[in-house]
Structure formats: structure tokens, C-alpha cells
Length: 293
Image (tube, rainbow, N blue to C red; front, side, top):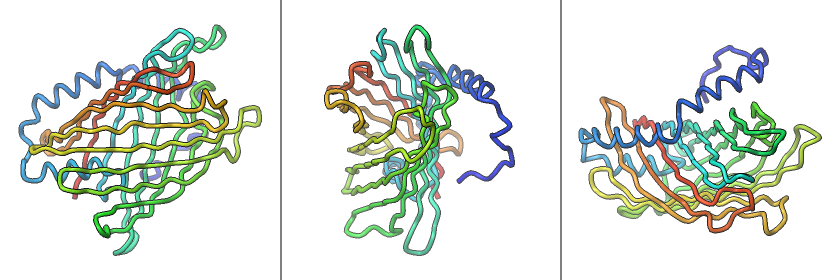
């Protein structure tokens, strides 16, 4: 986990945090991230070919023993009563910790910066931080029979700076990952189920499920095709409003800019099943900082 800075969040007002989040969200608009991807791809010819595929597979492995910091921007179209555009930038550092020669602990943190379009006449729209999530995966240091796996607790904290950007609940549950690497293929699935255990008493209880199957095919020189849709279920919602099921995919490339390794990726998804006010399709742009050993 990141070192303690010694700054108490208790002395930072929600309005200050929201204002900071608004400025940050504006600075990292989907168009800006897309332009960054195009720029990085255009100058990424300095990558070293002999280990690009190995780095790509580590970047695609959610519990790899490599520090990485993905900035994943999801632009959702057709959200809310006015079919607006919702933007969710997930800042999600992954930090592996060696426990013993046989076991690693992989920490995955997600801090979302959200722009929510028109919600209601009283609320308008909202921009700020969403609820932060932390997952801890206990994983064998050495895979057996080409199977890589990890399992551990997942916790969500009510850190949203605006009421409409979070659930107001502490949630806890279990998360697991399993994958295999066979030649150019990397295939696996991540699944998390969590339920609320505390928080604001006037907010609805939470019980949610998320699964993310991922399929990657790697080419020489760091290029790859990918599909990693995020399928969710709200167990508290009516059956016809419960599931979001996207279909789609895209591709990406491993780059080296100076001494910094990057994974740049673009995917698009059509939500073939979704709640009434949820988005009907999503454009995902990701820039991932890589720190291989």
C-alpha cells in the first residue's frame, strides 16, 4: 500500500475534495486520454522486441507480481433520463507483496473519479470521487500446471464526495481470480461478490456481484487483441433491472517512453443487457504505467 503521508483526511472538507476531483476529472477527459493513446502509439517504436510479449502478459494478468498503475477511463453513453454521458476514471494501483518464497499478496485498489450526467431536476449533475475499493489476493508465487490464481477479501469504503456518486455504505465480500497462459493466449476470469456491512442508515443496503472474463491474444512487438467486459448484477434490484452484460473488445500495445514502460489499450462494448437508466454502450481507454522487475 502507499506510504502514510501523515495527512489526516478528517481535516479536508468534502467541498474541497469535490472541487479537486472536478478539476482532475476535467483534465483527464476521454478525448484527452484518447489523444494520449494515439500520441504514445505514434512514438512507441523504441520498444525492445525480445521481452514485449512477456511484459504484455504481465500487464494483462490482474495478479501479476509486478507493480502497475492503470488509469482506466470508461465513457458510458445513454445514461440517465436524458441519455447523457457518464464518465468514470478508475485509478487502480496494483502492488504485489512477497510474503514467503511460496506466497504473494497482491493489493488492488480502485479510486474512481466520476462525472454523473443529469440525475433529476433537484440534483442536476455531479462530479467528484466515488467509493474506493480495495481487494487483497493471496496467490502462489509459482503457478502449478500453468494455472495462476488468487483469492481474498474485497472491501468498499464510502469515500464519495457527492451523495449521487456513491452508496454511502461499507461493503465487504470475497474476490477471486483464475487464469492461464498458453502460448500467445492469456485467458481468465475475475469475480467479486460483496454486501453492505455498515454505513449511512438512510441509504439502501447493498449486495452486488461483478465478474470480468478476459481473453487476450498477443502478437510480436507488444501488440495484442483483448476483450475484458465487466458484467455486474445488483441482487437488490428487480430481476429485469438487475444485470449489465456488455459484449465487445479491442486491442493495445506495450510501449517504452524513455525508461518508462506503458500499456496503452482501447476497447468498446455494447451493453446487450442493462437497467433502464444505465448506459447502452461504453468506450474504454486505458494507459497503464508498468514497473517490471
